Length: 428
Ligand SMILES: NC(=O)N[C@@H](CC(=O)O)C(=O)O
Ligand SMILES: [Zn+2]
Ligand SMILES: [Zn+2]
Image (cartoon, rainbow, N blue to C red; front, top):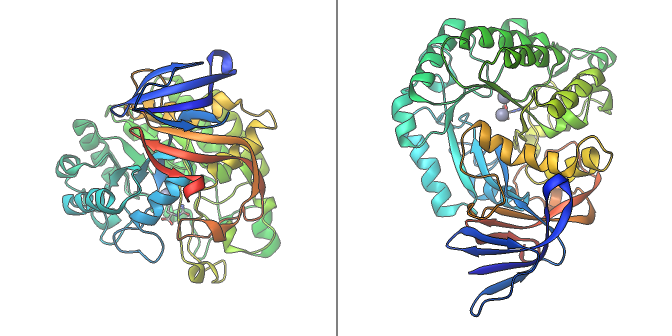
């Protein structure tokens, strides 16, 4: 038995109130303003810090198998624990691609053997080798433990293939998670948003309609299949219109946005620096504003980091050649707390909801709420602690972030999965 003593929880109406939390057999059995210590109980004094349900990130890249120089399940899940996450879903663009039951099983086994204790939900490929022309054996992938299917990293180019994938995913009850990108609209070397920054630096741009055309296409294709269709890393205003309209008609569409698309736009990029290169790219100030409004009104359901670690060597290449992607697990909460909650864009309760309960609800996961009877997946956050983001201190192998040097507050200090402490700042 464990007792978290002297914490604070977000109560009804979003007010913080003092709370002790008792955990037994991996579950929360009591939450009250004052609980007496039971004999033999382990007491952890959290000293006035905020206790929330563990964060859930349904879009990350763990790079194992195949790209262990960028990240491993061990390092990526440690980074997740340090970021306050208790559940992550990892994308299939590994080598080999997660397109067979063996790879799914290997990821789960590797997490059991060497992971930090964070739950890892493997997302399997839609098409074999992410090549876009042959469907994977989704039934076998699901049986092996796949949580959803996605070809993240590339868009499924053929509408015929996408339709077939949706039918099969619907039949099996697997969510279909889409990286929306129409390659016919891309110029070779395209690396940033087709907009002000691209023009100024004479760089080939990625137009927003390359994303939105797939969102619109997929909404049409999904309509009578019954599939749960989820849009990854929404970046463009036009994608938001399409998702909003589909939801208004009652279609089963969900969407995520990443912290960097909420906090940065193309005109914030200081120069042709690959630390600001990710796919989809940072869009215009207007797009950023629309994403924030969409997150607030529920058109975009939740936040996912798209944690995409790469080596320093790769990110030192010229911007046209460096790989797309930035890390996110270790900085998401303090960045969003500082830049969205402290300036009144979202309440603390809304931010926490969009990083815990809502992703869980969208995908029918049994986590994401802090209440009696719930699984004791917990993050403890020090809302007062203020510190500069320093990639050298990351537990992730990836140091690639545009937020280096940002001074932010609201850092996680302890993470528990099923009642067990898997990370704490004072023993890092
Ligand atoms: N987002 C990125 O910029 N990169 C991702 C791929 C992806 O999420 O599409 C990666 O795997 O590096
Ligand atoms: Zn993607
Ligand atoms: Zn991704």
